[in-house]
Image 1 (cartoon, one colour):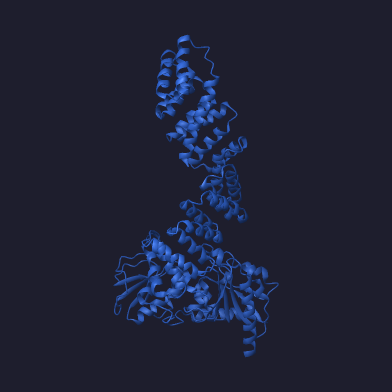
Image 2: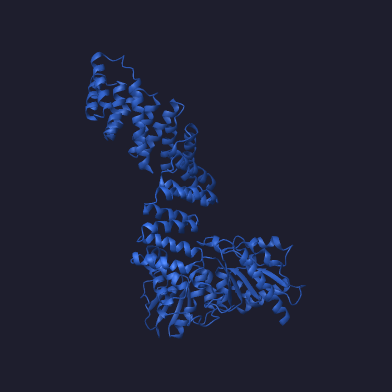
Length: 626
């Protein structure tokens, strides 16, 4: 950013220089000084900078306050890369002509070039005091303010700059970036559009524009930008790679796939483009075709753990567990894993016998992941291990209900332990496959006193309803900070067609920011909001024991019900995480779970219709059975 600014600043000096030389009044000079000035100006015009500087020096020997010589010599020193010398000479010129805003601005530019931002700002503000302010002056002041972290002031100066010169590319780009930083997504998209219209040749501008349009929900405008970039950079594999990344950030997976295929067509051995093609296909639910590209990426980039990890997840998704677990676990060698995962100072378990050995099983990632993989505490105990688990605080009471766990921890203990291992690394060493799943289920258990409390509470809520009403729990949103939550969460409005199914009483166990949304539907549907009363997972688990079924998006509550062996219908998005495999309506991890799969990413309409039809059939069957 600052490199471009400095380059523009120097070109600004050149522009000012020509204006001053052509209009300078030499009449106050004596004849010999006029001769020196003529020679100096001629040398300057021919870019013979050393000779020009010498001639201007001769003038200053005779007339130390000669403004023309000071100004032009300062500019010549700038072009000759004598920046510190130029600063001193132009500072003298500013003293001679303190009202010259152009000289003050140039002094400010030189101060900025040498990172003296305080002095630069002072010069710019003095220049504004003596003139109405040019577009470049407001822009240059804005650059200094932005560099010092005074974003709001910088934004105002950039806006003044653009008001004077509407096509000032640098200022418009800066406003676009500031708007992005401030979360002003509509303004960011608008400014990037203006910048692209002024100069559609800059690749990075186009990429930033795509991301801004995606964030602003203006995807319809992305097509033309992508078309221009693809045409202009058709032979540039790095540009196509960067374009794929921008489209990924904008959730434009179909376009991302098309660009990746374009690049692969001419650069077959580009592993990154195969990686992007695989990702785009998997996000759209086509894991089997994605694997072909992912395998190509691994073949081309065998030492890249991200490529191995991607292929491992895809192999797991189609049931190829033997290679999948090993490849997936290359993730732990990445800087991200080393930075974000707990790594106790005990011996890492790599599949050794555990009989009689103390073992610390370490949780990771989300709450659902912890619940799913805590099962391996039971597996290790069956092999003679003495197992403690390290989990996040919300999972503690649930983990304590497990029969295979000696102690539940929330901080790394002093030990000693014979072994430790992340929960999600265990399957590789236990050689887990479809035939060995699910293991003992249930493996978590509700607290009897809480089951009794919530059964009484739900009976009170349900008093007056028909005795054969089916009780169904509902969760419509996952945690908003999950990287793919926008794809997995349906939203309450999306679930609404289910609430009119006859013979069903609904109980919301939704937690988080949206837990009270269902209260607005209580006048129209038989729905009860329990979320605000739920304190932790033990409450949710106890509630589920008083319900006949849970219908939920792919979030931690789905794992909670599955691990407890309770009936649960899980709505999974088209991109489908590896754990739900491919094209199956059941889960080998949870015998009590039924899966409802999205056909097209982002479209839940057909899924909800499938769930409603299944719910009607289930409700009729259970009522007739009773």
